[in-house]
Length: 112
Image (cartoon, rainbow, N blue to C red):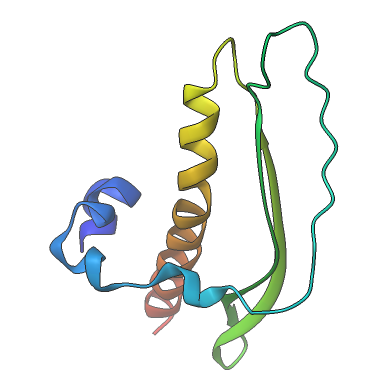
């Protein structure tokens, strides 16, 4: 399995990855995230934020895989430029969800 061999990067580089829709985990709703920022001394805001207030993820329950609803919020520091925080904020959700899904099923099959 690609995940065991190279983690998230190996999965995202696999041919099958293009067939997966990670955003189906996001429920349509009216939930909002409120975020306040302070630019500081920089000429522009380098930090990035991402928020998904209602996400359905698989978890290992007593009777196998179950669904849980979680909220995810993250702040990414610019570290002297926006490039790293921009990339991290764009990739965070896919990497988070991929790790949750693969680890849930990996744990399920290790208990069989």
